[in-house]
Amino acid sequence: MSVPDASTPAREAIDAFLRHLADRGLSATTRRIRKTYLNEYLRHAQQAAGGDADSGEDEGTPSRPLTAGELMDGGRAAAWLADAAAGKTRTRNTSRGPEAAAYPNSMRVRIDSVNAFAEFLGEPARLDRQPPARGYQLTPGDTEALLHDLTVKRPIHANAMTALRTAAVAALVADTGRGVPELANLNVSALHLDGSEPRADVGGEPVPLTQATVNILTRWLAARASIVAELEGSDPGHLWIPTKPGRARGGVPSAKPGISPAAVRTLHASHRALVSQLLGTPLRPGALRAAAEAHVSAVSQAMAEG
Image (cartoon, rainbow, N blue to C red; front, side, top):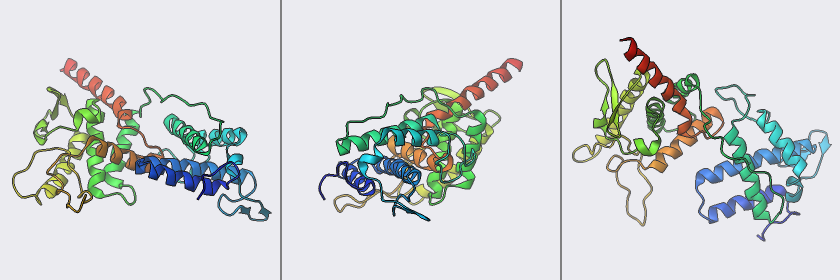
């Protein structure tokens, strides 16, 4: 197929763009996000024009499909972004309700998706890019609800052990305030979950843990033990391990889960994928750090009163 231009039907142009991203080797996560937001944009624009995003028809109101050039119209983009920011384009419920306002970073990714599509088409128009929402954080209450959902409700189609590992990583982020790269190399021996003052040794410092985090980590350790039991030999000790075999490469089977630690990118990708299903946005683990500040403050107050 020739390279799409402004006259190409928007649906065909988006499909060609997604194939282009795959050919360039972009990650499945990036391609999924671009597809989600461009499809949302096309659906919104076509409905506003009086037709369906796929067929070009709405009941009783026939309309031709939009072209790629028409989709890039600034007015259409502005209307879509306004409705998206207000939560009006959401197609599924979230823990904050079906009409909750969009997270700032999800709006930024919408803009980035349209700009990347425009570049692919050779269109000069660009939407003003927003900087990342610096310091955006979930409240401690929202963090607690998210951890509960990851542990108990498990998103549809999610692997149970992956969801539990994601909840355990997120719980440690929420208690310690440390990022995933700092927590990725922890060994099981860094956890001290028994007794009246449970803690994790992170970066040479003891960090107190809440009872909710202790419960989640205990469940993860039990799941981890069932994976490690399949290995031949001693437990390698990595706290975070893959939950399923990787892909065979070059005809060589992948190593069994547990021999090597889970990569930082694996932990991040699992978090983004699962949290995106629950909250409607691929929120980074760092957004949970406000809970750590509240936890540290509560511990300090208890020590002072004691």
